[in-house]
Length: 510
Image (cartoon, rainbow, N blue to C red; front, side):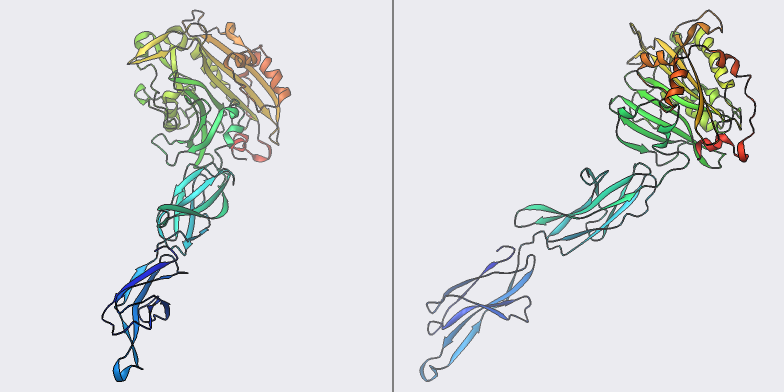
């Protein structure tokens, strides 16, 4: 027996003469055995066999053997047909399903539910699902269906906002003839995720402070599906370096009410248990200093947006002269207690010499950067990149079983951009500071540590402010005169917003 044919068999005995006809009648029901096939019968008893073809796969058929014999004596001209019992068989099942790709529903910024259905399956369906991807030629994702019955669906998560995806429904049907599964596919369809506002998966890469890391990204962004106790929605990117991940943290601000607002971005390096750099913006219209207070040291915690396991850094830092030095300072983020708590992720700290550095010139620099934050209504925004360097012979300190590298230098690159009423950058001023990671006995005088942003970019290997217009960027990044920075904190006055628009809000909610 196969999916389209079968050999029927039977037997007879005790005929008074050789049958004049023999064979089988058959059909798809016991009540309708309307088709016949002949079988050879050359004696008064024996077996019968006949092959039938053109059958349907996975279908039950009924059949009944018969012989026709003539009478004897005075009844020799008469004949009679004798029938056997009705039997049945089922042809082998093969893959015959027809698959249709349904519409995508519940499409959001990072999720979508795909639908599909099938008809005409004669084999056993054990698999349903969808292949999907960013193009029709690269649908490498595989989402299993929620049911082997029809219809079926699957929900995708971790998608990128404002992005078009391609998908195709499939069914895995068991073929009894080949002993394997045959997969059949529906038509290709698309859906586009919605755009986040005001924070978006890709939108933060357009921010003026985030260094050029696009060429280092691989794979897709992963957006958190739920907010943790630090009010954090985060956006994670994998990079071409498997030991580094890029994360942007956000929190819920009161202006605009209830909107997620970008807090800071960090590039974290698991091999050094420290960030490579952090990047954030400062403007009192969007990041007001509400003096919520600094969290105590018990607030340090692993960064939920980073899936790399080694984050704790130098957990005995104070015993060897170092502290967990913030890159995004705690006093930079005083809008809400949850926003402040995000600065106490392990991804935002590196071993920094405490006495006469963290507590000296570095603290002084942090305070002056905070004082430089533009006021509400100002058409200026301050962009800050803070990072660490590992130059020369690097020392390590024990932290449990880990040998934690100690940064040779800490740096801070500062860019102040001015915008016109159309949102275009009209002016940019830059300066950088680089310090060795050791005591500095020159009190709070950091004039000897002034550098150009260009020189720090060369040492760090990044383009720190790639979206600043090139002509303004070149001038600002080559500058080594800190006068605008050292006198700037007293030069900011509240500029009346054009047309009643708060420029700080306009920047992040265009």
